[in-house]
Amino acid sequence: MSPAYPLSSMNTPIIQYFEVLLALGGVLALAYATLKVGLPRIFGMRTPGTGPIKVVARYTLEPRKTLYLVQAGSQVFLLGTSDNQVQHLTALTDENATEILLSARNEEPPRKDFRALLNRFQGIRESPLCDPPAGTKE
Image (cartoon, rainbow, N blue to C red):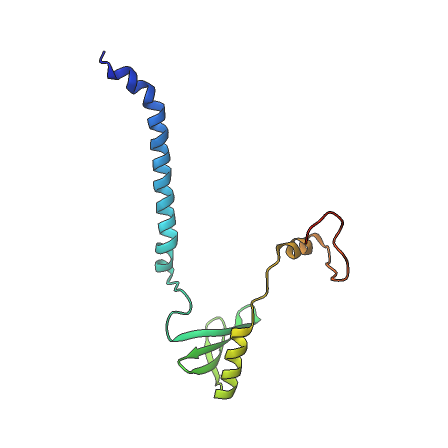
């Protein structure tokens, strides 16, 4: 029996533990890289707003019918889409386009409030005139 043998048998569970942690870290890194880099390439997803064409506004008419305001360079177009068709409806005049672009930049997206969403699912209506119950924070 060599003198290193008892020492290596004591460290075996610790070494195995670190090997498992290292393998788990490798799997997590591979999953992250696949989701971050691989999936967008496979499905052709692009980050919005990179390039000369931008979707300024979107309005859903029905589940599969949508209106888009698209800015291409300095021109703004109104497009209508359905399941299998994209239709050019009109090009906006410079005055209307400027007004719409300014309002789209100034318009904030609606704030998503978790408390209101939870209350809606519980059937509780919020009233701006009522004070919150005692002992709760706003």
